[in-house]
Image (cartoon, rainbow over all chains, first blue to last red; front, side, top):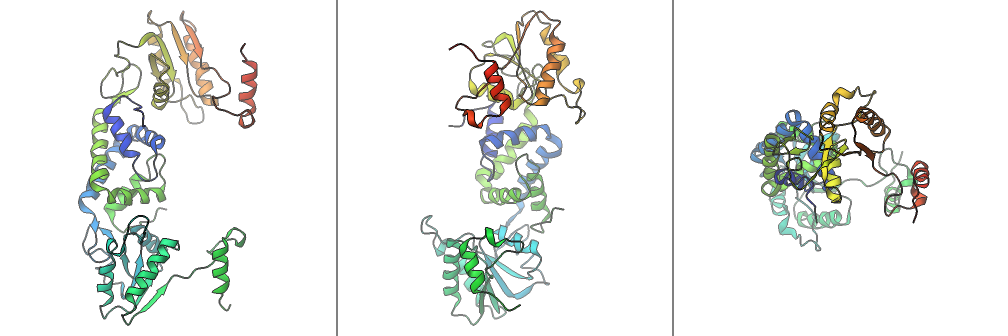
Length: 202
Length: 202
């Protein structure tokens, strides 16, 4: 049981809410609360406003599921993106990671998670129906399945691929192999095996 | 340089503010922002309100420096505490730690940090003048110096002790030794030496 540190309801309530933020536990929530109080004007009040603002104005894009103040989002409504290419990912953070890499200029489709029998997540709980609709658009040439290389991610990838087979489009997936800067000695056997089997001419 | 993950000013601003919370970095701030957006009603809006509320209503106690909605704080104004005893600590988190232990019933005095020549923190930057005033009160019998067992904490303890010598009160400090549950093999030499030199009859 969480023991009240400050005997002060308002402060305790803040600490318990901070402790629910992914990445913060009870101890770091206490530290965070004190750090925030010490920076009331430069951090605490601006953060309160930013939280309210984003809660009010940021919503999932009706097409791809990206978070944006506009709907459709800035990627779906951009005229500079390659609309023949859709990259299927699990979550918004994957979209951010791909955008940071700066190497992808197509559209996205966010599933909102992975299939998981254990957690009771079935196909209807993911944004798959929408993807099938998008795939039926004649403009789409290729769909890149970029779910995570985990068991759940790969299961989901297989399911999505099955659903898309009936369309006359290329379905591809990200290459597996040695990460750039990776040392063979530290790699797991699965990655090494895949990298060896998928070897390419120099 | 922090690269905009979402190409959305409002969301980026929130992420950069979250990244300034002690304990969160840029990556965990992104994760936190997504986690918050997924729990808009149960976490994000309540957190925004709690932050505003605490920023508005919680202030340092004019006597001891504790954070509270009342001034003097609930400890200084309590009739159940032993007013002859003052425990001198560095920060509010130390007060919380001592209150959690449930073994102290006196008053506190929060210095607000430690003396540090490197960081340019001198005696006037700490809440020491107030402490000397409180020590001159005839009701006070003992002052426990409970700064951290770090070099800065002990330097500060020595300075504070010097300042309090002229009063006719007992000045004590926390015992050093083997922590409860601690294994000798994992303790540093300094702690072991202190524990040995301060040994007590069984």
